[in-house]
Image 1 (cartoon, rainbow, N blue to C red):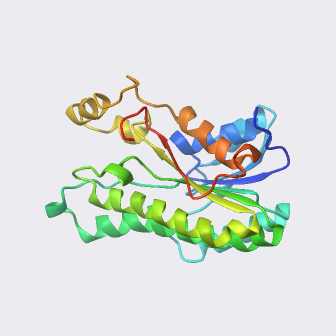
Image 2 (tube, helix red, strand yellow):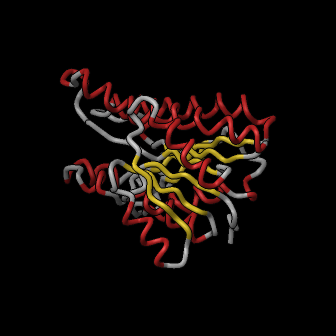
Amino acid sequence: MMDLSGRVAMVTGASRGIGRAIALHLARRGAHVVAAARGDNASAVAEEIVASGGRAEAAALDVTEAGAADAFVAAALERHGRIDILVNNAGIARDKLMLRMKREDWDAVLATNLTGVFALTQAVLKPMIRQRSGRIVCISSVVGQSGNAGQANYAASKAGIIGFAKAVALEVASRGITVNVVAPGLIETDMTRAMTGPAREEWAARIPLGRLGTPDDVASAVCFLASDEAAYITGHVLAVNGGMYT
């Protein structure tokens, strides 16, 4: 089992779905988890971790607010003195065909999914550089690799994460920091359950392994990239999609 004892791990969008699973898996491996989400939405997962004997705390964070990332990281540093792992998971979707997409739908998705990743990553780099160690894992999507009709804004944001992570990986590798991406396929979450029947069936039919993924499938991949076992991996995109896109 990958041992993350003594590590401080920050997870954005940790209140449900993939983010919740990531927070739980990191805690099971010994990390102290700072579970972040809007308002008090992360309180339940933090309480669940503590009740099961793990170490966690909840934090309110809106990644689109100016200065929020810096304040979030500064508060964690004041409490713990270090940050070892950042998982950039917070994301939204506002799907529309391109001809009908409103500018506010484009701006909202890019602000959360991509600019939020920029802000959090930039905020943790200084302490990680001082430590000369760190793991940054960004959650992209198979849509960022393959594209998908009706999701130009979402696909652009998730493709942007891949390019962003590859560039930052090159900048900070000499400081002992790795930056990687997990690109999930069709995962059983509230977001995918909201898909229309035909769209869901069409995507599911494209999965060679014959099933939708689970949040646990994604969380296991994140834990690997956050662990010492992945010390020689950086700038990589790990597809967790059942073979639907290779």
